[in-house]
Structure formats: structure tokens, C-alpha cells
Image (cartoon, rainbow, N blue to C red; front, side, top):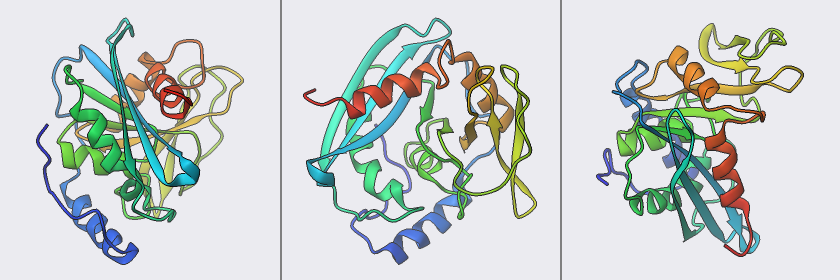
Length: 222
């Protein structure tokens, strides 16, 4: 795997914010991907009281969503917990997990924010730019912005607004469940991001990619 726009990871929070400001200029907000035959979920957790970052990638066939491959990587956690800068804490381990894959997925669905971020470069956009892979942000909670009430229908959604800009969508994946928060990561438009998230969602609130990666990232003893 080739790493693009390489930068240091052992940086101060101020330096990290400056890197995000630079990388945001490289985020592509339109569709730049081909036929999708595989999708992957990406997530990270922590062990040893936060001293070790544990990253998981699970690859599924598309549209059948059958498991193809999974990878797990651990790295010492070298960046403190700072809201808005989680990518500097998690991505080094995620790159280690991605490097183990034999199958390169066509889309990455990441447990985190894309451009729905104060500097428009959250975890999902960050990993997309440095790997040059199409990425979609699938977050369980809202980081910034506001939105109207989401229609209580499967696939119903409403835009997330921040400073008069649409930065994502609050999406209802199932009737009667809380929405999830979808945003552009890199090389995927918002409409396509919503479409693929819904096509990856079966009978749970979260898409299968996110659900399986979350389970692997947080499972003890693996």
C-alpha cells in the first residue's frame, strides 16, 4: 500500500491541526471510484488503558456482504486523546491493518467523521487522503452541525449543516432507531455515500461493515 501526502505522526496538537488544514485541500468530494465488488469496515479501539491502539479492517463482498478477509493490527498509542484529532491517535494502527490485506477493497466505510469536522478533515477524510482510497464516514454520534428531524422511514435522511455548508447527512437506517451520521470521506459524493451505507445495512442500525469492524476492534483476546 502506497502512503500519499506523508507527514509525521509524532506531533503536537497544534501541528496536528495544521496538518489537517493542509490535507483538507486534497479531499475530493465527488465520485472517483469504479465498480464496487468489495467494501470494508474500519474501526479502532484501545487496550492496556489506552496504551495500545487496536485497529480492525473487515472486507466483505458487495452486494452480497459475505466475509472475504479481516486484519487486525496493534500499535503503541503515541498521541493523546484530543477531540477533533482522533485520526492522529488511530491511523498509524489502521495503516498497519490495511497493509495486511490481500484484497484491496473498493470502498472503505470508516467508524468516524469525514468532512463533518471543524477543519473538514476528520478520521475518514484523513485516511482517505493518505491512502488515496474512496472512503465514507459512518459515525454513531454528531460531532458538529445541526439538522432537522429525520423522517422515520428506512433510508430517510436530512442534511447536516455547519456554517451554511452541508457537511453530511443524518440517516435513518431502520424505522424507530436513532439515525447515524454519514459524511464524505474522500472520492465519494454525499449522495453515493448515503446510497452505499444503506446498501450495506441489513437488519441492524449500523452497516455490516461498521458493525463487524467494531466487533473485531473491541473484542478481547483476539
